[in-house]
Length: 231
Image (tube, rainbow, N blue to C red; front, side):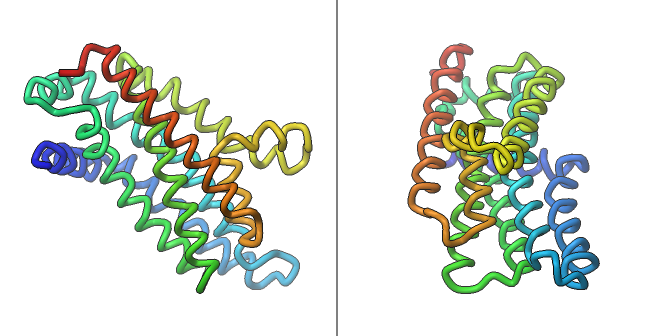
């Protein structure tokens, strides 16, 4: 527990000192709010929560991948992770400590999106659950990319196209049934489905996201050991 808390505190301080990372947690809800107030509400032909759902999906499915990848790649590059391993930090302790702050910050932003959208009752519960699950999946995927990357630049080079593919595939799937069937296994597709239609199959969506989370977690543990970091 002490190791996890120490890693959590370290990552929180590192991320809070990084303006580029902080901006990711501000810009998406800010855009959602402005577009909702200035475009959606005055126009009866535009769904009131269209921009909220759009920005929320992009935030949870894309933005946090690079945030997590950058945090871990920085630890790898600066040898901070090596020192943590020598101090006896286990893979799950490091992952929880590093991803914990990103997950909490993502949950706070999800609440902000929900407030902007004015969601209530069952819709609010579904929105927050699927958003937090999506944030967790993106954090794990970003962590996996970060642990495999040689440095921060490599993490960005790999993480950015992956995030773009995962983020835009659900949008393309909307216009192509073949892509929609294939995209069904992606957590970003399920995130997009629920945030745009609260009457969709919520159990199926959460199950798919859960499988994605499990796969990313296992791959992270394997990569952690492959990099010679297990003690």
